Length: 297
Image 1 (spheres, rainbow, N blue to C red):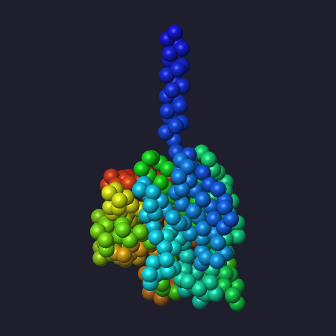
Image 2: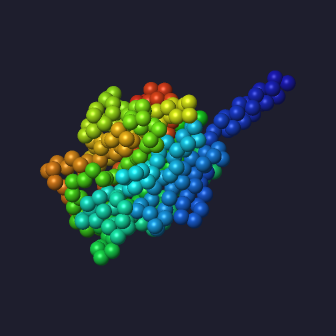
Image 3: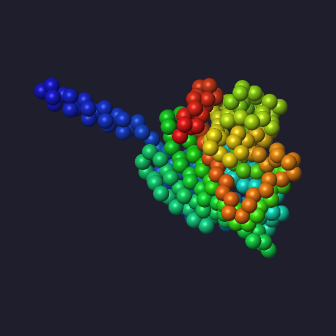
């Protein structure tokens, strides 16, 4: 009898553990991959040939509203959560105008889906009319839900130089997020880095392992953090920040010679970022502790 009860208790405990795990799934629908967490849309990875580059939108938080925004007034090139670069061998792989340059998805495969994580492999080519492609990149995207109040994207990209590449000094570069205006500093939100400096004034041009932005919306506090992995080339990159809700870790605005960054044909640049969409502020979300875990991975 006691043995039977013990078995039943073990089965109940196992079932509780399974039910507590978030189910993360991906479905390819035309030119996008939709990613759901427990049946609710978290984000779509947009791969349209009519867009400047692949990007994530929306990025739904715990309030079920996107913590990011896009097509903002004077900044239509801010597409939620994205990766690109301006001034690459005379091309522009960041701002609007496909004729100036475009990052085109060649392949996007769902490797894992339906359990505790989604894994996507994506290959892209950087092209513009009348010029040879300067860069191709391979992306590994992993989406998880570490807890009921955190959603996570790991974005790993390897850029291969297909020729000698010069990237002139630019603030339009690499992995970037445009926050929803409701959460921005200009509307009462908080932008804070790993050292505790806040706002554009305290974070602009400063090297830091991470930045978190959060604010109150619909009666709840929620936010978005970007973490740089210590293995990255150029780590720790300084941050280009704006109080209206833009933030990006990038060395391209602060090159060593103050003019450009030079890369040789065949050179590989490896970059890894972790994005955490969370409830609460940076302390409640434990962003410092999350970085400590991330840097050991």
